[in-house]
Structures are given as structure tokens and as C-alpha cells.
Image (cartoon, rainbow, N blue to C red; front, top):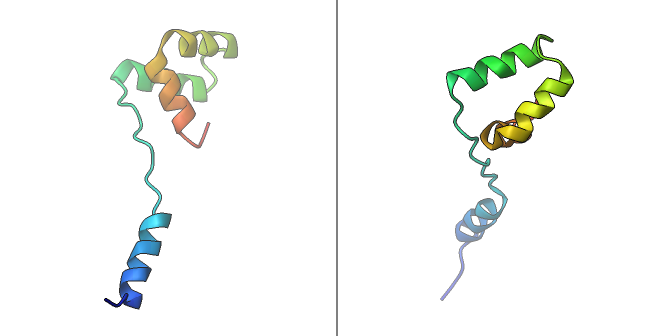
Length: 67
């Protein structure tokens, strides 16, 4: 049995493929809240409270790279 370079290449490629974590789906209210926060309409303290009380929103916020 021989191992072909193509097989090794595919195996190595499979090791390094990045699979992004699935972002939680947000409802319209959550999307609007994020937009309001990013535009400065929601104070930091209120934003942190929203994140504490809404685990789905908090997961999304942690999963996104831009804040």
C-alpha cells in the first residue's frame, strides 16, 4: 500500500481548515439593539445589562470580531 502525495496534501489541508463557530441567530430587536449600541445610543452600563440578561445576544457579541 502506498501513500500518494495528493492524499497527504488533502489530509494536511483537512487539519488546517478553519470552521467558524456558528453565530447565534438574532431577532430584529437584538439586531436593532446592537446597531443602537454601536451608534452610541445605548450607554455602556445598559449594554452590559442586556448582555447579562440575554445569553443569545452575549454569545453573538463574543463570536463577532468587530465591536
